Length: 375
Image (cartoon, rainbow, N blue to C red; front, side, top):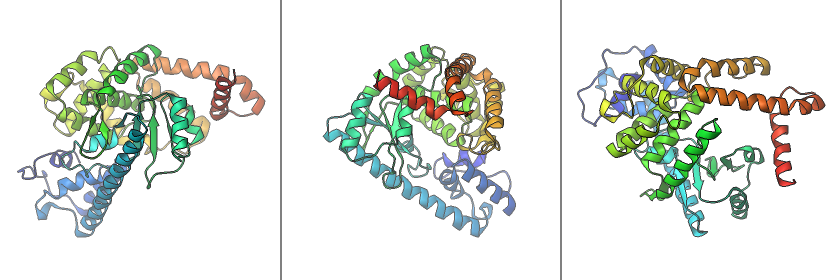
């Protein structure tokens, strides 16, 4: 799979070929992994560069081509929704920017090869005002999403696309001190957004490098991260200027992202051949191997882990163990997360007793939201 990833980002005419011809069974396994990691469109671009005798069996080629064409159509639809929402908010006097997703896809060699997700739309405004604005525009907000400190999302999809409205760029940090530093940086940097030909605004590459690295670290510590997010970061680095990479390198330690960045640089060098000149720090082989192993196991955001769907107690124990298992990537973040969790646990004990439930996450946050609105 790594060879195909490298081929996907090479120029259309390339002398690079697979080391050996794969069997039909190996191709089927590779396709399954591409589906698991949301890399179907990316790897199909590499397959098109292979000599005919090195390609998958014909039935799999047809299936893969159909799936890649679906990805292409989904990209076109997502870009259309993003442009439409951008215009709607602009007409009401609000600045916007697309975070991750479509903003990343346009930087790929083929903007339609990246598998789509939801739309993360930053809107420059205060939380309560944006909630009222969105409702006045005819959208229904998913009430459960209001528990987030960064965003909320629409209850219904827009043309099949889930939309998240970000009133704060997600810092991805548990430490309140680091969170404040990253917020200050991101909120200042996002004001430099630019309009792109696709019809929406995107933040600077520097903003994306910091925010998406924090996003990778958060999910790595929690349930896991997939190759889709790893490849996104490779594309960002390829499109970043030397000045951008130097600036980000200087603030990694300040944002407690240094160890995760070092692991990521090793992974990107190993799987796609990232050049040393494009790195934002020296690679760390020990942490990099650990990250790569976890990415392969996790799939997209950890959804491939076998402990999804297990009973609550067993899942809770495994998640608690995971934080200490990933301690080396961000020690202070793990400690702050555990402190926050046990503070919540102690505060929620009376509610657990009253309701006779072990998990009261939803009820606790509904109560907190009500108390804030009705002091």
